Image 1 (cartoon, rainbow, N blue to C red):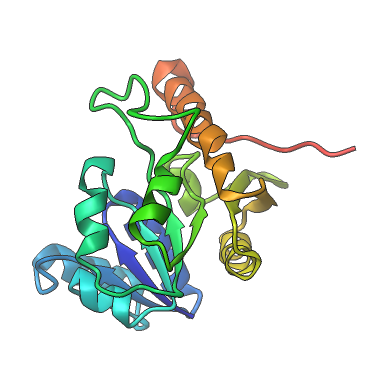
Image 2 (cartoon, rainbow, N blue to C red):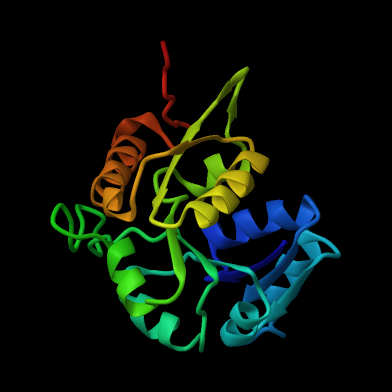
Length: 209
């Protein structure tokens, strides 16, 4: 699968590297794709990874991951060109600068706003509810951390489920895209626990009976 990473920081770098190491063709995006930082990231990810400008990464990919700060999201999406039909994985949380809460929520969500900015793309919310360290290793002994996702396109969600399970998560369909209204606040629980004394090596598990 061809995957473009828009925002190659901790989250995007971790996800992209793991997918590249699994054999997917990954394009990490940067305004300076030839920078030393990008060269190091590509070298770590392996031979199926490369660096590109954001628009080139998006245009040559089937799946585009958004892992950028919320305040930069609209401009970043507009810079990608025509992304009609592409699967967009929205990993963004609309956080306040001090991480004390969200800039919007309950009656709408960042994911729904992303879908409005990219109306012909197929947006799926995913990878927003734990830190990048858990994305690097979601295994807790024999248990798998849960990763919820939501979206309105069944085929796009199946693609995201596959990519999520490849990383070792228990991938759970949370419903339509409007469910991001609860998944984004849910991320605040992980953030508040992680920085409130429990540390970052924590995740959630969905129990079934």
